[in-house]
Each structure stands twice: as structure tokens, then as C-alpha cells.
Image (cartoon, rainbow, N blue to C red):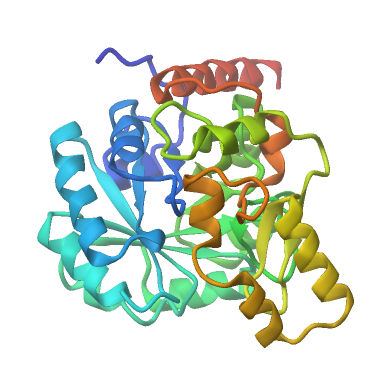
Length: 318
């Protein structure tokens, strides 16, 4: 496939991952399967399979499939809070994955294990203090994710604009900006803050290759400013689109519900019900604040072409 010339000057991340553009497609639960990751890779980005919603058997299917869809580098995101982490890592290694994005756990747990196997390790952080711990653990790069991001988020509520410069001043390894990035202008802003690349999640949810349900995509496209909020900070912070389930969580929190009560109401399969199966009433709908800026559902190739073009125009205006 023909790709556009790159207007990006910093090649730190593109060389680290052997990709064309310093754009990372985030590994999101129920959304980032083999089809999306391969499409992002073929468009010149780093595609990531989101293993957080996959048991080992399902992950293996996606690892097999992605090899038939692209010969470009693809990564796997593994949230360490889930019980299948070790099996997911070993399966990914078996199928030739060499880039791992780790989150929701200690960077010390698997970094050296993966480095000893010749892998590149990236860890997601939400504060400069955690960024320092990641660097000390030996990771190759950091995703610094601001409060605007969708899905599971940091408790400190540090916005991307404030977070990125603090993290860059705190560490010497490459930094990938995330949270609130959905267009070429916001890519330019993230790089202007000193990041070496950007990671985008919510914008890739609304693409043809995303496995998100059409109901969920439509609700995102129709969302307005203020339609998302960080919830369940006392359990596992997560940014959600407002719906009946969200309102029920808010009511429980207003009554000072215990963590056990919140977890009981959350139950199992809420995110699958909302994001994959399209239940907009009872489902958990994880998305970032940029949902209000998303109005279409392009292919990944179309999206990346637009991102590169609008980035170049944004830089020209500086």
C-alpha cells in the first residue's frame, strides 16, 4: 500500500518500533483485535492487540489472525491486574510478538523477563512518580496518559497538558503522549510538549476495522462535551459515557457505597455488553473525552492519512 511521506522529524519511536509514523493505536478491551491492529500497522502506525478482554484461547486466535493480515510490527497490550497475564505473555512470545505494552501493575514484574527474550517493553503511567519507577525497572519507553483518556485511568486526575512536560522532565527514556489526542492538531500539541510519539485510543474506536458495536460507535459520534466522566475511583477508575449504568454507579457513590457494593453492581461482562454487544443501557461504555470531537467512522487507512495531513498543516501554522 502506498503511504504518504512523513512530516514527522523525531524518529526516536519510529526507529524503536520500526514503523513509519509516531502514532500508536492503543490496545483497548473489546475493541482492539487483530483486524484493527493489522490495519493500523499497514497504515504505518504501531497496531496493538488489546489482550485485557481476552482469555488465552481468544488471544491465540487473534495472534494467529494478525499474522495473516500484516507483515508489519504489531504489539500486545497486557493489563497486569488480570489473572491471565503470564499465559498471555508466553502465548504472544510463541507467536513472535516482540513489543509489549504493559499497564495496570508493577513495571518490575515482567520487564526483565521480556527484555531477556529480546523484547521491547513499554509501560503506561499516569504520574511522573510512576514514570520514574518504570524507568528504574528498565522499560524502553513510557506512555504518559492524561486524565482525559478513556477506559481505566489514573486517580491523580493530571491532565495531558500538565502531565507530559512533568514526565519528560522526570525521565530520560522516550515518552509517548496519550489522553485527549484525536486529530492532527492534538498530535502536534503532544509532540510540542516534548513527547516522542502519541498513542490514540478513542479515535480508533470509531473506525471500520474496530470491533466496537455499531450502537456504541453511534453513541460516541452523537456525544457532546461533558458526556463522559471518570467513575469508580475508589475501586478501579474508569472513564465512561453517561448511560443508565453510569447513573446507577453515581447513585451508589453518592450514598457512600462500599467498594464491595460497587464491585457487586459492576458484576462481570459489563464492558463486553456495552462495547462489543451494543447494550447502551446496561453496558459499561469506556471512552475518552475526545468522543465529543469524533463525528465519523472512517477506515484506519483514511484516518491515518487525515491525521498526517492535518498534523502537517498544524505544524505549518506554528
